[in-house]
Image (cartoon, rainbow, N blue to C red; front, side, top):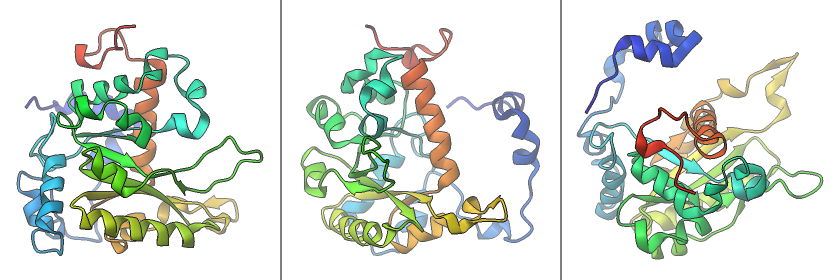
Amino acid sequence: METLKTGKIEELLGAEASNLLSHECKTINKTQLHLPGPDFVDRSFAQSNRSPQVMRSMQALYGNGRLANTGYVSILPVDQGIEHSAGASFAPNPAYFDPENIVKLAHEGGCNAVASTYGVLAASARKYAHKIPYIVKINHNELMTNPNKFDQVLFGTVESAWDMGAVAVGATIYFGSDESTRQITEIANAFQHAHELGMATILWCYLRSPGFKVDGKDYHTAADLTGQGESLGCDHPSGHHQTEIAGDQRRLQCAEGLRQDAPESLQRPEQ
């Protein structure tokens, strides 16, 4: 696998390069970290209560794509169409009104997996579910209600995700919101059922509470979001920063298109 040179990494990180590359944590010793590697699934989960079926699903995620068996995971998540309507999300690049092109982008781009809505993934499940791991997002926030509500509600079922061959289900919880207690209960039950069926689980964690803004300072990013995900027994919690980065990436790929000199596998699908 091609390794990026330090200069290229600094170029990609831009103004944050120095802080990100030279930072040294003084709180936790690096020997305590579970670092990525070819045996990451074994080292991190073999002694847990995950069943052999769940372990196999997790290895399917970590063992696919350009990052296969490195311990790193690159997932293409696309669910804007259900939150804002497809027109608001994909009009600049109409090819992505076709849900198959979303899956095709992830597959040809070498992603470990593709995460999207039940309908998007179901539309091409017989063609792609055996080629790239599917992660079905089972809850969503819709912004077409006026006034807008910020509430993740179930749009799909765990059984339906399993039937289409998905290796994992994903969900979002708005911790601290008025609806968070219901969301936590719903997703805890859904993730338990997913594990019973042998699927892995992924949680996108956000904080939504005015109480985290004090004297003009925003403390949303200071909370231990991934710890909340671990408490629910999910296999891969994703915090605020990771999700926002993924959001920026998918807007680049699906709404604005990529530069013309991008690798062929990441160019726009043929119209």
